[in-house]
Structures are given as structure tokens and as C-alpha cells.
Amino acid sequence: MDTLQIENLNVNIDGKRILKDLSLTIPKGEVHALMGPNGTGKSTLAKILAGHGDYEIGSGSVRLDGEEILGREPDEISHAGLFLAFQYPLEIPGVSIANFIRAAIESRLDKNETLDATAYYHRLYEKMDLLKMDRKFTSRSLNEGFSGGEKKRTEILQMAMLEPAYCILDETDSGLDIDALKIVANGVNLMRSKDRGTLIITHYQRLLEYIVPDVVHVLWDGQIVKSGGKELAFELEQKGYDWVKDELVVACA
Image 1 (cartoon, rainbow, N blue to C red):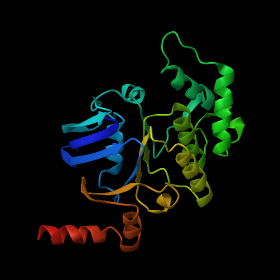
Image 2 (cartoon, rainbow, N blue to C red):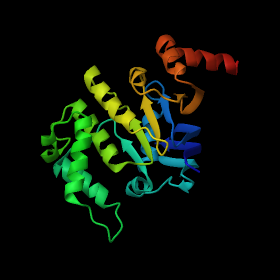
Image 3 (tube, helix red, strand yellow):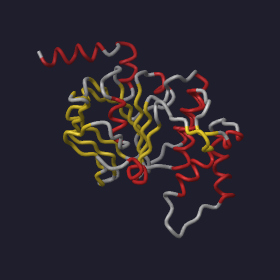
Image 4 (cartoon, rainbow, N blue to C red):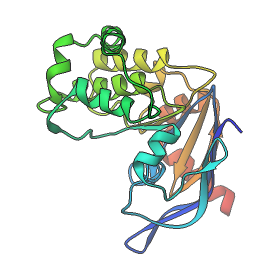
């Protein structure tokens, strides 16, 4: 199946349950948004999907196009076709952007394949132009001394070059001014494809004004408690998350 499918996922950290029987299916060709207040498990889900090892997986499964990836190493998950754009991208001194992305692409090639340098740089510069990135950035160390907007654009550049089957964007709008937000959103929109599924994790609705999702989910206390169309994001913006909490109280009464 052409889906990223999460079923009955239970995750703990330090003995505390963070995700509770969470289920979510993201088909290729669709953009889903996961919204919720801070501390509800949004970033925990992103890290679990990418293979972060600091969490205890109680039960559940995560299948990428039918292949189980839960509990596998991050590089294996990446090679399987999942890309995570971090909320706080790491700095890697001494490794240039161009060399970092090139190494990532080469690691995915078959043993007898080689990467044509001219074609690689032509494609790299093409993607950088779309993201309004100065080409001099290719020689800078990855994220070292970068502003928040520069870091996020570099993440989207990596995503555009690797062309993963599934993209997870964890709080990509965090720390961005409106101009940087529009540029990053445009880069994501250019990658929308029938062959790619995307999950946007965000606290605020403003990013979804520029990347319009097909489906919006609300995460509350480790569970998805509400799903709907793009209108749900605007409703959350107007009413706040307490509205969801109040609905849950009424439903449980």
C-alpha cells in the first residue's frame, strides 16, 4: 500500500505514557497537518518515526508502503524513504552543505552507480534558486551560524534533493518571519506530488495558510481526538485548543 500507516502506537519516556494508541494513515498524494498544544506528543511522534532511540515503544506498528520501520535505525528509515525536517536542525562544523547532501544521495546509490558532479551541482543550484538561497551557501558548514530561516530553508533544500516518499515537517514554521515562512512554504508546495505523502506538525495555523492541507488532525494528550478538512485549522485558530478540551469533557460525561 502507498501509505505511511501508524497503528495503535504507544510510547513511553521515563515511565510516562506520551503516545496512547495513536493511529494515523497518510497516503501518497496527500498533505496532512497534525496540530495540538505544546506537550501533547507532536514532536515525540516525529522523533519515533525517524528512529529516535530515547523512547520506549510499548506497542504498535509503523509501516512505510507496507514495510515495518518501527524500531529500525535512523539511516535505515531514511533509506526506506522517510525524511524528517527537524524543529531545531543540528550544526555540523567542517561539513559543507554541498558535501553533506552529496554524501546523503551517494549513500542511496547502488554499488555500481556514481553521482555525476556536474548534474548534481546543476540540480542543487536549481533548488537553491527556488528557495532564494545564495549559492555561496554550498561551501558553508551545515547550519553553523545560520539564522532560523536559513536553517529551515536548508532542511527543505535537503528534502528537495533527496526526494523522499514521505516528508515529516516538525514545527517548520518555528522562528520564521513572514517572508521566510512564505519561501519555505513555496518550497514544500513545489514538492507536492501524487508520489509523496507529507505530515506537517505545527502548533499554529499560520503555516497552513500557505501550505493548504488535505486533512487536519488534532493531537491531545497523546491521542488524535479530532480530524477534518482544512477548515478545522481555522476553527482552532479562532476558538483555541480549550474548545477541543471542552468537547472531550462533554463527550466523556
